[in-house]
Image 1: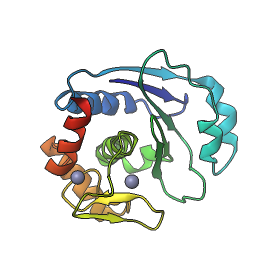
Image 2: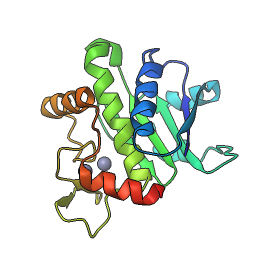
Image 3: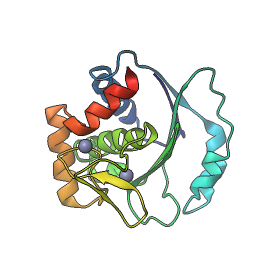
Image 4: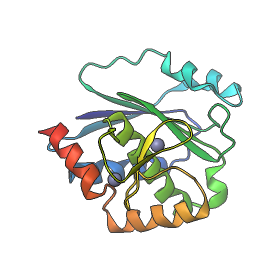
Length: 187
Ligand SMILES: [Zn+2]
Ligand SMILES: [Zn+2]
């Protein structure tokens, strides 16, 4: 698996540390994980749109030389979501929008961003399938996991923040049901 992280130049520096942690946790799951991190200045004009329509990012050509996922990490709000952090994904593409992160401090935001990246990557890999018991569809029509898992429903409140931090510390992002699916996909 290849993951290409594309950042705008204003994303806080701490992000690379979070990305490395995401990759190290994925390496405990998947046989082979390679990744790259790049800062892309051509994303800057997009940031003038506030909030940013995600379609503008998805329309961009991402030259992929092999099978993989592109994860855009942008220092802005995404579409109508008035949240500090928010993510959206399609198969093989994710967009993560982050705003004003330094205000809440690295310790606070690192585990949330870690969880959000793994959550959107999970969707990109095909989680959660219809047949899964103990799952729930949210208002936007996306199925989420009801276990203790990064694939649980995104509510972005303080309760979620605490849960994300616990999962971050335990280094077990995905529950056994989600893990089973990911391992089958990787086989
Ligand atoms: Zn979701
Ligand atoms: Zn799960």
